[in-house]
Length: 75
Image 1 (cartoon, one colour):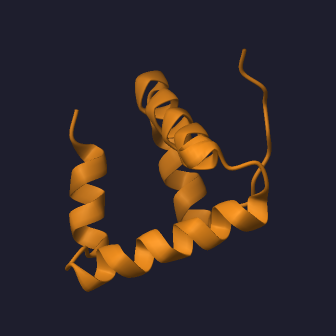
Image 2 (cartoon, one colour):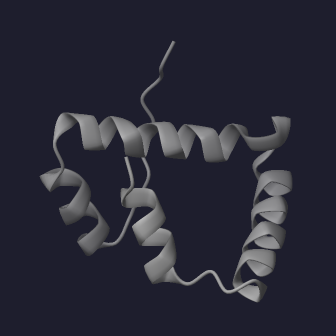
């Protein structure tokens, strides 16, 4: 069962999300849910620490914001 949460984002991110169609919004919602549930994390601190480590490894392997955007846009 889904629950509604509220998060603050910058104005550009809000504009992009608000202009998305229903299917695109559902994909973003699934992504956020997956990120927060990744690896069975039970606290936000442990989750954020894990995300930082993953991010550092991804950047070291050449992941750029442009590549990530391209990857997330794939269907």
